[in-house]
Amino acid sequence: MLTTANRKDIIESKKIICSELAKIQKSFYDEEVEQYYKDQGELSLFWEMYDCYNKEVLDYPVFHKVITINHTQLESFTATLTQKLTPLFEAINATDFIVVSHFKLDFFGNRDNDFVPLDAVYDELEKVVGGSKYNEAFKFNIHDLLKFVDIFFWITRCDPSAPEYIFLFDSKEQIQLNLCKYGNLHITEFNVERLTEDKLAKMGFSIITGPEFDNFDESGKIDGRVIEY
Image 1 (tube, rainbow, N blue to C red):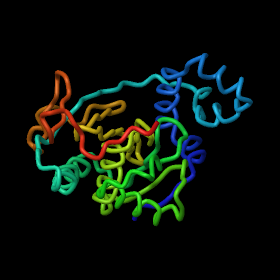
Image 2 (tube, rainbow, N blue to C red; image 1 turned 180 degrees about the vertical axis):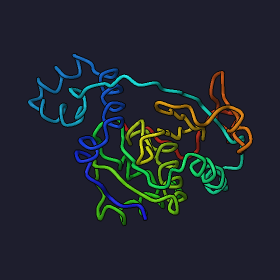
Image 3 (cartoon, helix red, strand yellow; image 1 turned 90 degrees about the vertical axis):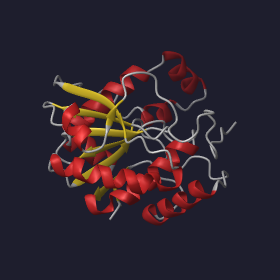
Image 4 (cartoon, rainbow, N blue to C red; image 1 turned 180 degrees about the horizontal axis):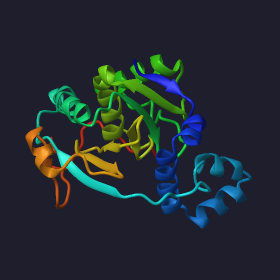
């Protein structure tokens, strides 16, 4: 089942996960933003978000791809994607997973957005964490992959107030996956490339080499996506 986990424990015990979070936090760092928090007397809140900024970035090979299942029916997307991902993870013997955001931020964004699919997955997430605020991490087994895909796809697609990047890592730190608002998968493999283009094609995935577009609406408008001002 999808369960809560301590983010600090994961950072301290998983060297590649820590390194990847440090890498992205260093790339996002902005002196002006830090100064703003300092001027507001909230510098501690800034560094709470940047919890891996001072961690070491390790040197290891990475293999990055953006892939899609070319599925255009939004209502059945999460179930179909789960069916495709299951053999992908089986191919690399990945059964247990860790979910973390790029910064230490609340997974719950705009709870005033009453778009039905988003509201439903936030209700599910509240049951998991026992409340409506949570900025730690999650763990789950491959048998609960659908719940992960369903919850975090709708949050990423419809709520820009939630963390911009929500990452899935397998517990062996072979792979990182981010499911974007368009329904595409950004995958990074560490140390060894196990998922070659040929293998992915046999599993029903296509490689995206150019610009990304929404798989579900050619107009570019995402129903239910509300920017909170």
